Figure (cartoon, helix red, strand yellow):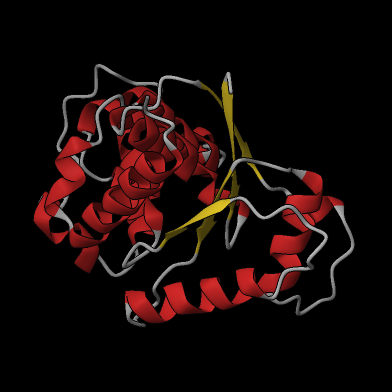
Length: 215
C-alpha cells in the first residue's frame, strides 16, 4: 500500500475546512503513506430532497471509493455518542455490494469553524492582510466549544483583518477565505484542550494503529 485514500462526507460544502485538520491528525498519528484526501461532493448525483445519511454515504462511496471514510455531523446540542450512533447505523445500512472502508466519526460540539478560531496569524494571512495590527478578539481556546455561532465569528474576524471598507468589504469572500484559514494552519495541537477534538484524535489514532498504516 503506497497511498491512503480518505473521503470526507459532511453536512455542507463549507465543512471542507475539515480536510487539513484530518490530514494533520493522520500525519501526527504516524501515517507516512501518500495521502489522497477528497471531499465528497454529492451534488453531482441525484439524491431525494430529504436524502438520508445512508443515501449520502452510499453516493459518496460510489463516487469516491476510499480506504478511510470520515463522516461529519455537528452535534447541534445532541450528545456526541448519539451522533456517532446515527452515523454507525447509516454505515451498517449501506448496500452489501459497496466496499466498506474503515470509518471515523467527526462530531464537533459546535460548527467545525470553532476549530479555526485559535490561530490569529492564519486568519490575518487568509484575509490577505498579514500586517493587520488590530485586535481580532478571538475567544479563549478552552471556550471555543461554547461559542454559539463560530462560523459568523470567523467570517467577522476575516472581514476585520482584511482592513477593507465600503464596497470592497461587502464583496469580501469570507467563506472562501475561511477555507484558506484551515490550509494555513500547520499545527492543530492547541485544540487538544477541547474534549471533542481529543476524542477525534483518539479515534484516528485507533483506526491507524488497527489498520497498521503507521508501520
